[in-house]
Amino acid sequence: MRYLTVNDVKAAVPNDILARLTDDDTSHSITEKVIDDAKIEAAILWAEAYVDAVLAKRYVVPLDLESIGSDGARDLIKESCLQMTVYRLYSRVEQEGVVKDKRELADRTLAALASGKIEIPGAQERARVRIRYQAPDPRFSVNTGEE
Image (cartoon, rainbow, N blue to C red; front, side, top):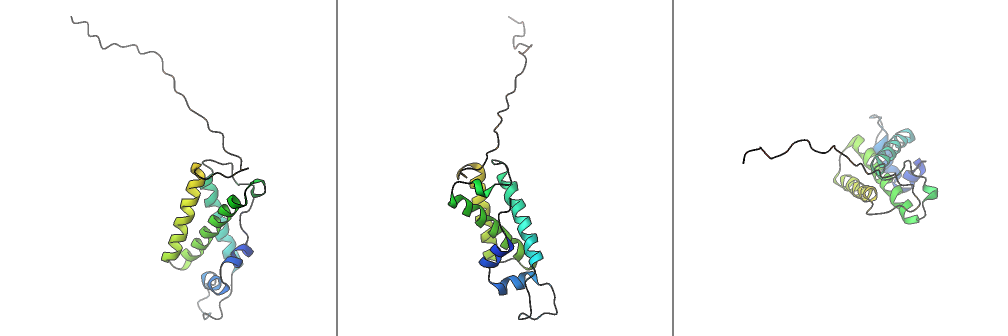
């Protein structure tokens, strides 16, 4: 299940910024730059894999957004994926403080979802297996036999 589309990214990020982040042709001036959808798609795939890797601690991934019973939870997942996509696009060309903040916000949100601090209603949780260890009775004694 996909969390984000290229059109979602285009709706959230101004075209001139997307063109600057995805057009690698150095012969293009700033006004000649064009948006490269393939680079946006690659960033989305990376972000979705990242989101799934974090949420896999608690949930069966990929999440089925249609079965999630809360618009807010769906929006959190999509927004976290969007922030990680934007971070990935910026990281191709430069590191900016604002983008670092976006990644940190997405990381905190995903960590809260994975830990259960924020629930995803309708998402299938992973079975939690409790591991129990059993050892044979000890065969030694602290009694040295001295009296």
